[in-house]
Structure formats: structure tokens, C-alpha cells
Length: 576
Image (cartoon, helix red, strand yellow):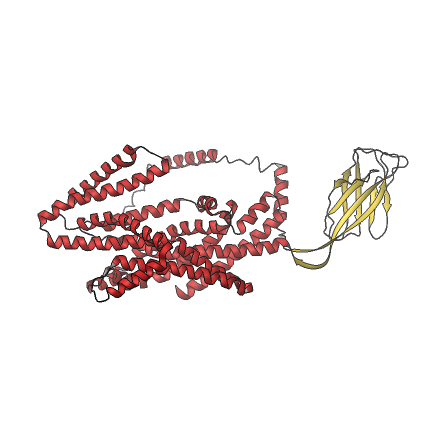
């Protein structure tokens, strides 16, 4: 006989976990002030109904309005029999009673009016000033009945009860609200498009730096790292200085560089500084040419003048970013030269001699970058104390460099890949932690109210978000193709181009389309702080309590988001 299995005992922690969960949620209710008392408030419910009805009737179409007045006499107070009175005609009004004392209730009924329209019931005393009594709405048959309270306006002569109806006449046409909404929703879509495009161009290369499987195996000798760290700030300063000179003497510098290249044409040595100057001069002249062509074409193209403004804007952007380009190129050139010098020293020096120069170079590199960080902190906090801005940072940086040199002693190379990986991840996490709304406020202060500020805020946040998504996709690729290409002796760049890129194109397209969808919705929020787009118009109408106009903007946002979801699904189905 098979014995039945022993009964399963419930884990001892089950009931304590339930009790703790109840306590946590009870505390959460208290902190979030969950209460239904406000929901039961009749005035709040009336306001909610009014707002929902306004939102259900977006202000999109309009007609000319014709005001019609129907009147009936009333005595306040009664001078005769208070029987009901009726004014007949195309529209019929009835008062019950036909006279009354001040502050009493009178029933006003009517028939023959336009169905389903709002009416205004007024008392017109001897002064002729209309006093609003009630605002009823006719039924589907054009009738109404409402009670009004008479004001304290006694008079010997008969006064007038006036019922005013405003009826639409003529053809339907788009309202100004609809036209403004269309203009702003187009601005919103292109704001999100520009932000997504520029962010994608920057996020794609940056995502490789935040992919652990690509950066984990990167290493470099200590002497190369130290020389590169020392050369990078010097290259930045050199590049910025050259960009400044090129911006003022571009033609002269380009001519001198051409002459030097002609004289050195037979030399096999590459003159890096000369090539850098030539490239910056070409970029500067290109920006000037774009500005000139754009300004000439703008008035000539008429309705397509935005193409000329686009070319001029590109030239202005290129000219504005020339120092940044010069800094990057200068740093790249000097770091490359420093890396070559490091390889030469490693081949020419003995292990003892190499160890002797590694330590001072590491100390110098650490002190240089610590001084730069100290200068940045001093700028933010407006410190002028040399002890805090110079000596302490140099001492800390030198000690860190010494620690790195001692730690690297006996090793062939430093594992730089993980350091770059963690640094990139940290930067992306910080940028993603900053809400676009906060970034938009900063950029509005910098560039002014408008869609440009919103685009800059979205670009910065989108770079961090897409770089994170892209890098995680790179980390999840199949390692087989990458290992096969690496086994052929391919360079690191070839590994990325032929082993990584073919595997990540479909998800990259999907992530980019999804981010464009997000940016459209996010641009409606940053418009609340002046970031342009339809959010700015929506915020104005909400502040003015114009909920019918706000409903038009909400409807436009819903249509655009739904359309983009359909479009992105079609693109993903075709290419992903």
C-alpha cells in the first residue's frame, strides 16, 4: 500500500509577509492622501461634468451666429391678478405666475426654439441693463422650462423677461483654434523629428563605448595612456586656437598651407598640423559659402524660401561649432602622435628605463586632469583660493597617478575598456535622470522661448536614452560572427563594421522609431515651459479655462500619436 504524501506545510513567512504588505500599503494610502470626500463634493462633480462636456466638443468648426430675442412682460410686484401670461408668435413664452414679488420663483417655459441650443434668460428693468437669471438648454423639440428667481427690482411699470437664443447660420468653416492647432502640431512633429535625427547620429557611435562586450578587451600600455592624457588637453587648446585663427585669416592660412603642401609634396612625412589647419580653413569657408548662398536664395525662392534659411542655418551652425570641431581634431591628432611616441619608447627603452619614466608620466597625467577638474569646480562655485583650485587638485591627481603606476607595474597593458564603459554609462545615466522639462527650462534661458529650446532639450535626453538602448542591443548580439571575424586578424573597427553592425540595424531602426513617437508626446510637455510645439498652446488654453480649445489640441495630439504608431508598425514590419 502506497502511503499518501505528507501534507505540505505553508512557509512560515507567508502571514508576516502579508501583514507587512498591508502595513506598507496603508502607509502609502496615508502618504498619498487617498480620500473620497472630495469626490463626493457636489460642486466638484458639477465642475468635472462641465469640463468633460467641454472636452467632448473640441472647437474645430464654427458658423456665423445670429442672436434672436423673444420677450414677455412681467410685473414686480403684482398690481393685478397673478395668473399665467403667454406671449405667442413664432416662438411662444409662458410665465407662471405672470407677476410676483421680488426674490420669488417664476417658471419660464418656451417652445418653437432651435433644438439643443443654450438660451439666456434675462430680466430687463427700466434702466435697460440685462440681468442674467438662468441659462437653460432646449430639448430635441425646441422647448424648455426653467425656474428663475426674480431680483430685488420692484417697479410700478411692467418689466420684461427676455429669452435670447444664439443660433448658427451659414456654412461651416475651420475655427482659428483649429488653424493654430494644425500649425503647432506640425511644428511638434518636426521638432521631434529634428531632435530624434540629430540624437541618433550622436547616439550610434557613443553606444559602442557603452557596450561591455566591445570595451571589455581593450587595453593599452601605461606610457601610451599617460602620454595621451597629457596630449589631449594640449590638443584641445591647440585646436580651439587654430579655429580662432582660421576664422579670421582663413584665406591667408589656406594659401600658406597650399604653398607649404606644394613645397613638401616630395616629402613622405605627413604634417599633421598643416592638415589640421587646412581642414579647419575648408570648413570655415564652407560655412561662409552656405551662409551666402542661403541668404541669396531665401528671397528668390518665394514660398520655398525656407530652403535658403535652412542652408544659411547650416552655415551658421557649422561656423558656431568650428571651435568644437577644432578641439576634437586637435585632441585626436595629438593623442595619435602621443600613442606613436609611446610605442617607439616601448621599443627603444629597456624594461628598467621604461619603468623609470612610467611613474613621472602617470603622476603628470593625473595632476593635469585633476587640475582641470579643479578649475571646472572653481568656476561653478566661484572659488579664488589657490589652495583649493590648484595645489589640492594637483596633489590628489598626482597621488592617483602614482597609485595607477604602482598598480600597473609588472603588467603589459592597462585595461582601459572597462573604464571607458563605466564612464560612458555614468554620463548616460546622469543625462537620463534629468527630465526634458528641466532641460527645456535651462535651454529656454539660453536660446529663448520657442521650438529650438525644446529641440535641444530633446536631443540631449534622447542621446542618453538611445545610447543606452543601442548599447544593450550590442551586448546581446550573437558572439559567433564577431569571434570569426576577430580570428581573421581584423582590426577593431573591422570587427564592429562586419561583425556588429549587420546584427544591430533592425533593432536600431525599431528603437529610433519608438523614440520619435516618445519625443512627439514629450514635446507636448516641454511646451508648457516655453519649449515650443503644441504644448505651449495647450498650456495657454488650460490657464484660460478654455477647455473646448484645449480639447482641439488634445485631439490633434491623439491623432498624431496614433498615426505615428501605425507608421512605425509598418516600418518595423517591413525592415525589422
